[in-house]
Image (cartoon, rainbow, N blue to C red):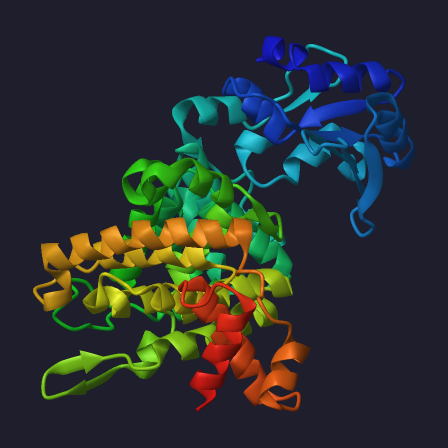
Length: 471
């Protein structure tokens, strides 16, 4: 492990930049070195105020230093290209022993002097890591910092660790406090859990510890909500199946996106908001797309329906993300759009092959999540394996074929946008003698649809079309 730390360019650069400071490498960097992983994030605990060393490190490494938390006197240094970051905090009580005693789990309570060789491991964290166990440092770990109730399932799932039984019991005893941390801190843990290598296990651990019922009661409320014959699972089981198939789609884009797979992969890797890319947001969309089914469930003459769960679901997401989790407006709207439009493609299956106008309607309605929501509909359809007509293999195949076609169209729409208007709005208004307002807006939209469908190709035919369409 020491060799791995010393061979890290980031560690070597930090040691060279801070030779006069009493600094310890702690937390994830030590763990990553022990696991043989590349070190891109470095946590340093220092004696005294980290302000000056942070600025010195930024100057030496060509990065940018800023205060991350005035409450905890934490500073962060980031690379200009965001390829690495270093967090600097003062040693708790000025002592490495006191600092490690206050940490969450033993695998993170290991320290190495920045310029030395000694490994300080008072809680046998490296032993736990070798045994693949996540164990709390102390009995007050969760009561001192309730956010650890989310961090435990996130770390266990992400690192492939078993949760120590006594630690699990401590978590269950403190689970009522899981929603106490600020919403943005909860969202950060959920982002890492859902964006990690095994989000399904992370969610199962949240469920086992009782964390889901406290932090995401709307998701926990999907348990036991029975569905119709197209589904073989209740809404909760179906939701996890949709997430599972979302992961399957990510891993096999050639199958689900065809020749445009590379472009879809690039899209999913795009940064979106709240330190989240579009791929992680799609996983959130899978988890929340049916969130309003409990409130909309109706059963009549043996038929079970959830009319309006898409529109109500968008409202519920507003409350969860913009309200409780303090997410950005961009992320909230993105997730709302995924939920609002997740049924749309399925309704088009009986109309295949789709006229160009229907493709245009879909692209315009789902913009800017056309590709994302189409992938979500595929995961949704693959997860409906009941005995109803929509679950028949031929219907599933038809959905997947249409989805590939729509993904290609949506990618083209993202790259090229709608067709360049043959007539400006003021020209349409003058020709049709319209005042600004809804009727003019409808005429502009009609011309765009007609151009996309190839029904008009020049100004003259556009004027004729609009005049006839008005009549």
